[in-house]
Length: 65
Image (cartoon, rainbow, N blue to C red; front, side):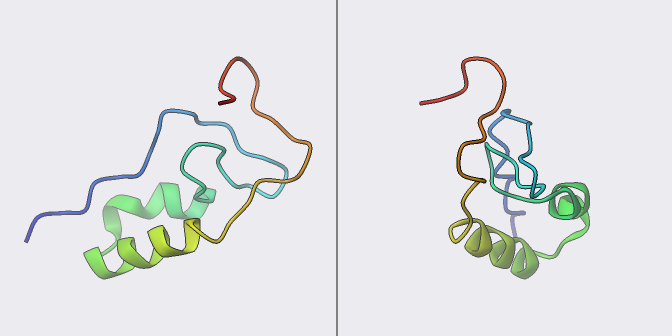
């Protein structure tokens, strides 16, 4: 079975709740990604769809779309 690729978008800045502005994962999920089974990776991806960054916080630079 092929590994599920990382959802990293190379926008590696986190808000005050530790949620990445790019991939919407937290530090634990980012750090453990390569250790997760495909089932765990799918669960993380599902959870990212439910997350929002802290209102009013933005990453530095021109990362806003």
